Length: 235
Ligand SMILES: [Zn+2]
Image (cartoon, rainbow, N blue to C red; front, top):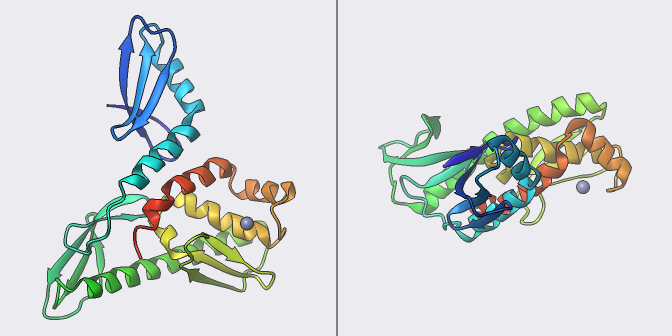
């Protein structure tokens, strides 16, 4: 496997080189990204061609991932996402209910009934929401200061279709599911909502404000879209 360096994290790809090929072709399927390239092309030239199509690749990879999203089982060993990292759920029996803790890539939950999936789900979601509020509040305050706007309150939403919302009173709501996403995507949504405190529309002027806080907002939007099914797996 080769790795294409990208701002959202390296994109792995399979490379097939052929002396008879004259153009670069790429395909995304259940095996991920496969690149067919002529043998005369250098690695640098090839990677810059792939980077030009990075948005397309990320969108396509996201579509494949969405088709492969597994339903939550809330069992020990369940794969989870946190700030863009793949982590595992660790559920162990304990006579007492203990606070969930993140340790060595594992979210550890100890409780008297580790088989009780409703309780496990509740505990995990509580933990995610608390982490989300801490992270979002800090992020929003820092960005609000940069933009010179005042935020009255920040709270969590669990809307199915929106990542954030705000109103003219300076109240901002962000979807707690975002805490699963890589930090630069949370940054984009926070920047987007804060920019609305200056421009309550999606005019070119609005996007200019977003850009001052988040220069890579267009690719962030696409990445978020590609990741959406994965982020909605939980809850
Ligand atoms: Zn908006």
